[in-house]
Amino acid sequence: LFVANAADPSPLQDFCVGVSDTHTALFVNGFFCKNPKDVTVNDFLYKGFDTVGDTNNRLRSKAVMVNATRFPALNTLGLSMARIDYEVGGLNPPHLHPRASEMLT
Image (cartoon, rainbow, N blue to C red):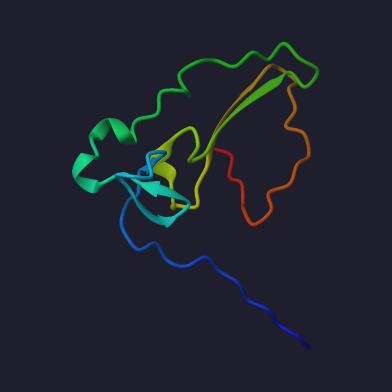
């Protein structure tokens, strides 16, 4: 009987807002981190979920996915988010989440 365990290391800091400027940032895991002294409350706001998705398609649903690329405050947290809009009779098609889970509320 063989057993294998794997895990990502624990975060080394409370937050790491991702930036693309590698000269003024620190690399920990994921994207380079914005200097904590330069982080503002606006770095933790994402306004992309306030628009209703276009459900005029075969599935009659629209998903908007957000990860650290679109919302840098998620960097190193191991999280992503999604907004799903359903028309009456809309479907959430079968899909996979390698190394991840999904929770719909």
